Amino acid sequence: MQNFPFDIVGFDLDGTLLDTHGDLGAAVNHALSLAGRPNRPLGSMRALIGGGAKRMLERALDEDGVALPEDEFKALYRELLGHYEANIAVHTQVFPGGEAMLDDLAERGVRLAVVTNKFERFARLVLDQLGLTHRFYTVIGGDTLGPGKAKPAPDQLHEMIARGGGGRAAYVGDTTYDTLAAKAADLPCVAVGFGFNDLPLAQLGADAAIDHFDELVCALEALG
Image (cartoon, rainbow, N blue to C red; front, side, top):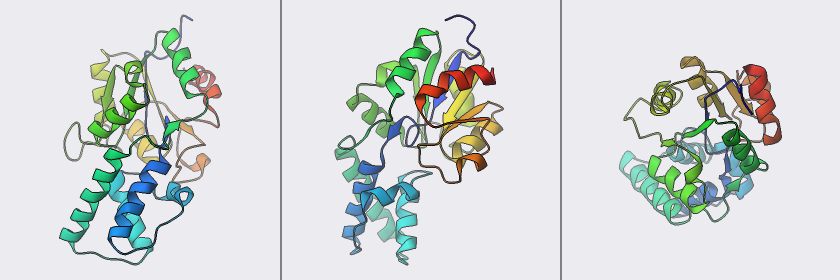
């Protein structure tokens, strides 16, 4: 298991490690109901994900042709967050092969991190409820470093490396938020095709792409 090319591998959360669309979608539907809008099928919520829960709600309202005053939108967003926090792991699960992949990387001595645009407290809560927190040396959320520091900016990935004590790092994600952040941080990036891709997989700008977590270790070895 020696000579693996990366000391640190970071993961996006929503749409990369975890399939969270059901619980995020239920929270958006809760907010839409409060706004007098019809609910959407949970499966359709995948297309709204990317950039955080606020962007999800904005996209849903935009698609319905609804423009709310700022104070009403903020109140609705708070309701969404409250519902999500109380129901964060009802439907959410690790994508197939994810836990075996994490085991494989850990056995190779790789330090694992989560870097997400999700609020840190929510990221930690869902990882806790799924029994995954102990696998990661750090969890960096969209609010961890303050305004303007979340993906696609590189700051979170720089912080990931600093907290990991340095070394060669790679990042795994599913959207342009991830690939652009990795490029800005000068890190190789693997995109997953089973996530909440905001562009076709080949257009995301990743250095490699996989369709199942069984392929990740080989993809990282090839990048190294």
